[in-house]
Length: 349
Length: 166
Image 1 (cartoon, rainbow over the protein chains, first blue to last red):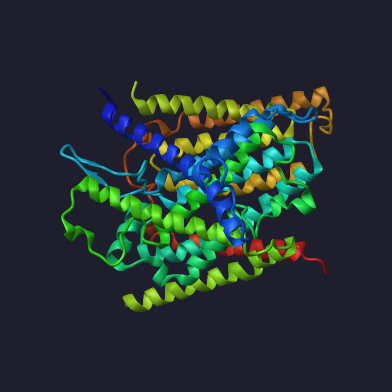
Image 2 (cartoon, helix red, strand yellow):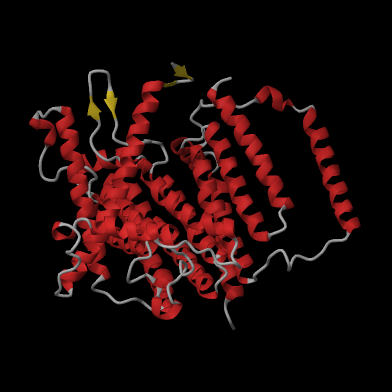
């Protein structure tokens, strides 16, 4: 059966890919919550959760079960539709970003190649940015619909923080795009396979991008939107049960996806470092599997750094946050951009 | 009916419906949210025309940045259904009449143009791809492009100057 240029097999392939990426996102996010508490325990010289199953590996299931069985409360004075839309948007936005990330080397079969990427579009990384810019609404709408002053304040904080840190993030990205010359994620990866990882040539850009990713995910030291000693609990204060679970879970999925984006942009994506893997002569499916594993290793490392920072650095004050974003990161990112442009021009002429 | 024709009709109906909801919603927050939906449907139309860059930038700039500012203002001023001023009946009538007149003029002006013979090609062409667009902008249209960027810069500096306490 053919609908336009789209075959049924193509649709099936994409549906399987999308389902497995969503499943993967949930799985990783689940175990990031456990890793967070384990690492916190390790850094604070205690055990962390160790009761549910061996080494506490069933702890995320217990947490999820707890959230499911909580009573769901909708404040009377709230707007029930927008109150529901907030967490739903947060979750959808968190899951959509992963569409353009190449998760591994394409699988070559007898009938053709299957790319391990849902959509390899011309816009690539810009899609990620557009989805990130939509991500503000989940928080803003939820915070406003709660009809609570603390929630509203936190939502406005979150929105201004995310809008402010999007700017240095995209300026840092431009310097990377100067080098790769393409917005396509697959081409960014293949450029790095041929010419070395971007982090080697753009260390400052990576640092700026990483700081902005922390701010975009509302992670410590930028977790001002949920500063519990100032705002009680932040924008999701009125939420309970699985709606709260969606907000908290979306944060972990965001962490996972932003780690994957950073690994793809700066750490060579699914490239295996220091070796020429094409000369190994592996079976294509085995090579794809190994490359996927390598990407996951990079993502796990970045997730660990996220957690490490959370349990090391205290929270900023709000004016410090804005100062850092507008007065330090943006000029620094502009400087990085102009410097890379000048060097590239000098090398090419 | 091909898949792009189905998409076109769905997007068109959604765009018109959400645009109508922007105008008719009593609650300003709903208006803003419907406007965001409208931007998404328009981006969908851009993608049908294979203008991918325009589609993504439309979402980043309009839906992602400008509408956030709209939402900011409405939330901070706490505008809602109650604070919406009651409009006079004759004012509503005048609005309908002038809007209808504008539509009449537009339809009359566009009816006999050659737009029909210049219908865009769906899912074809590379004009909307970022490479072609960049080359066009920095060769054929470089002067207007740079001039408009200077205009944006001056507007930005102006906004900072106004916002600064003296």
